[in-house]
Image (cartoon, helix red, strand yellow):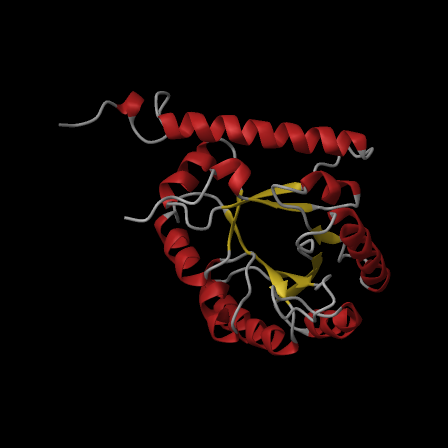
Length: 250
């Protein structure tokens, strides 16, 4: 029996769409309030909804609610979703740690990679994007340098040492097909996020002084978006506060 259109996926009576709409509105309200408090109410950051572990149907619902930017951190999952949702006008952001061998796949669908943290990855992405530009005419890939703010050289969650940012920036800027977009970081666990985001803002300012177009700051997740906005975040990566907890398997 065919389900009525009004109760189908994304329809007016679809409970999941209603839940996502409510959660999305609450997050957008937080973003607007934080931007207002930071004196940048007319310059809202880009909201990237991180959809890892959630089905493509949820992304379709989010698109119907006005979401244009989605983030994924596993290539296999991201590639499958991008293919399934090719009929939608979405900007795909790769936000997780990336193996060089996955660069070719990521170059097929991603508009931006937020986790560039080593020279080998820059080279792999440059090669993959050049091939994809020739094959499909894709645009240049936005690259955010992921910076480790934990003092461990990115051992646990990836990221370059702050001292290595200039060398990575030079390599990205010199690569045809790559666009140096800015910096990205994750606030350290178990510590207030403000000092970390203040440090990231300083790194960003030094980068932008050398590369005036590289003003992007990808920072802020569900639990710390207000602090990130206070210190200049231009891109937020929000998952659980919009999509809820990870779906049960099985």
